[in-house]
Structures are given as C-alpha cells and as structure tokens.
Length: 116
Length: 109
Image (cartoon, rainbow over all chains, first blue to last red):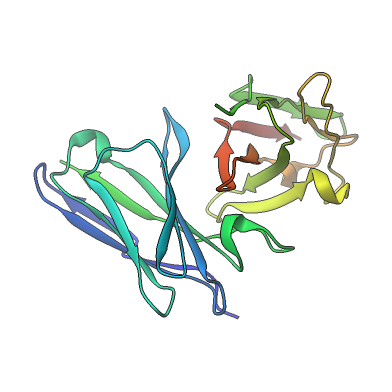
C-alpha cells in the first residue's frame, strides 16, 4: 500500500510569505502528526490531528497552523515566514490517535522548506 | 514535562564491535519508549518499542525505570547499521511523541 505522501518535496520562500504543506496519510489512517526537524533542535512536535480535530499542539507560535480534511489528508500552514522556519517538516500517520497500535507512526519523506 | 536525552551526537565503532546508544528520559508517569532509525536518504522508521520486548536487526533495548534509561544495544555492529538513531517517549494524556536529539552511528569497516 502507498506510504505517507508529502508535497511538495522542496520549497523556497522569502521572509514574510506564507506556505502550505500537504500530507496524505496511509489509507485507513486517521491520525496525522506534524514535526519540525532541524539540525539544532532535532525533531519537535507541532500538532496532531485525528478525525479532523486537533488533539494536541506543541510549543510553536500561532503562525503555525494546520487542519485535517474528511479524507484524513492534512495541511500545515506557516504564515509570515521567518528565516528560522527553514527546516524539514515531517508528517506521520497512524491508525489511531497517538500512534498507538501495532504499526505506530509511519513517517513521510518530508518537505524541505528554505526561507531566504 | 517530559524530556529525552541522547548524550552522544556522534558515535563510531568498528564492524563486529558491540555498540550501545544511550537514552535517558524524564517523565513522572509510566513511559512508553521507542527507538526510531533514519538510514541515509530514507524515511524515519520505527526500530523497536520497549513494550514489545523484541529484537530487531539484532538490536535490543531494555527499559530501566530505576535509572530512567532505555539504551539501545547490539553485540556485533554491522556497516549497514550506520544511521541516525532517535529515542522517543510517548507520554501525557494526548500521547504525543517526544524525541531525543539523535545519535549518528557510524560503523567503520
């Protein structure tokens, strides 16, 4: 079966712009989590959506937001981009909320965002 | 608040040597611990979880609640084990994953 698909793979934006990233989970998975990965901070949790509802949110400013659609696909939006937002944004899907169950989380390849 | 610490950013061992990647955590409740691995140019993937008490690719990890540790071990390292390893803790009512900063393991020939 198809894995977690993130689009686009690479993105270059300028400061002040906004960006939307997309994540299509594994078929049947209803939970989607987003992580920011940087060399300095490692993997940091952004938020998790389950059945179109945000279950949990990490310690990021309000410029970072997300949503989930009825088909479980999720989007993440970052407004007023800053240089420090340059990172690899990873999406992870799981069958149930919190990555529980035998399969745990399945990660996508990520979207590499560069802010110039 | 929960925290996961991986004290070694880089670790190099020779092929055939034992390897131990350290992970310590802080959490007041009952933790669930995981090891995730990211091979070069591949996705982050689950390696093993403490609750399963399994051995994957020769790796094992034992949860030591007294020392709040979940070190990853393999008796004989292979070159294909070279990768980035992340320890993760699942906690809280929302059950989110908290990752350590990762250890880059290099197995030398």
